[in-house]
Length: 312
Image 1 (cartoon, rainbow, N blue to C red):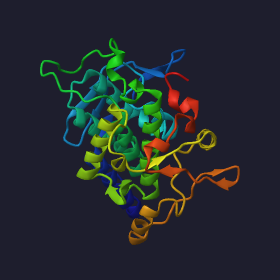
Image 2 (spheres, helix red, strand yellow; image 1 turned 45 degrees about the horizontal axis):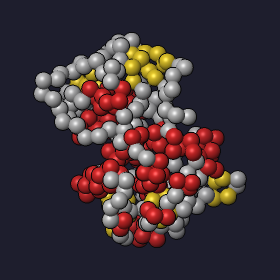
Image 3 (cartoon, rainbow, N blue to C red; image 1 turned 60 degrees about the horizontal axis):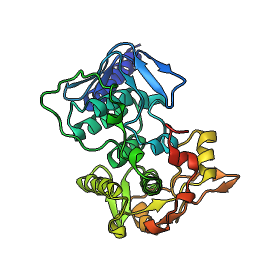
Image 4 (tube, one colour; image 1 turned 180 degrees about the vertical axis):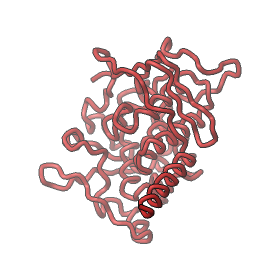
């Protein structure tokens, strides 16, 4: 009995540390999914609160309708939708504040990452989803000091549109290729590396990674008409791979062993093992990789991936 109590106390302490580190949601979202619309919608019956590690409360008011528009459409297909499993709680908070713009831009995205962690999303997947938002989510905003939450937001749905959704099809293809390259690199390195630029590994969760994502975001705004050597790895996503996700319910496949020579040294030094790649029709899927954006064509991607969830 004493051993049981000690174990129980340890589990409670562990949970408390986790809540303190990443914050916690106050209860569960009370709402309903709305069908028959051009994209999935979730309407809250009452306010939903996330309390961050500093005690700051992020509240999505009751009556708000969130649609996941703050998360780029390609991430829905390649990583998981905002209403999938453990993403829902953080997505409700993030969607609202990206629309109301009543909190600081970077702080809002950081709260999204913390919220995912508080909800139990693993480190690598949380960082991949956060990277998608930082790279191709809603445009930068400045907080209007006269605006205080709660602010009714769904009267202006365009306010929460992502940069990706407002881009041309060619730019969307390059954005997907860029995100796929980063996601594969993060998965292959167990969340340690964000990208490889000119044979230089950019470590995740660093100031350099933040700067790189800012650069990529500005590059997308310019239709990627920038210095190509600074874009890093790009990867094509095939129709077969996309079908594999739907069938196996797994996110973007990692690089297969030896696919990225620039990554080999890091993997060996860090004593990391390459994870298994996705198998398609019994064969290992070896994603096409390039450093040259000019080689990436719109036709290299499934049409439904380019359209995104709002248009499928």
